[in-house]
Length: 115
Image: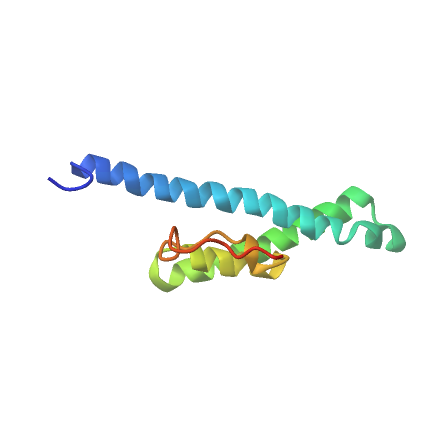
C-alpha cells in the first residue's frame, strides 16, 4: 500500500499544498500593500493628494506588480513553485532569510543565524 493509501488521500495532500501556497501568497500580498503604501505616506501630502488616496494607489500598484510576476511564472509551466513565489516577492523583501524554503530544501538544512 502506498504512503497515502488512496487517491482521495493523495488529492487531499496535494490540496493542502495548494492551500498553504494560497495562504502564503495572500498574507504576503497584505505585507506588500503595507510596504508600498507606507513608502509613499508623505509624498501624497506634498503634492496635495488625500492621504488615503495616495496610500491606496501605492499599495495597489505594489500588489499589481507582484501579481503580474506570479502570473508570468504561472504561464511558463502552469505551476507555481515556492522558489517562483519567493522570486515574485523578492523586490519587497528585506532579505532572502525570510523566504519560505522550497520543497527541495524543506527539512534538509537549518536557517543560518547571525551571531
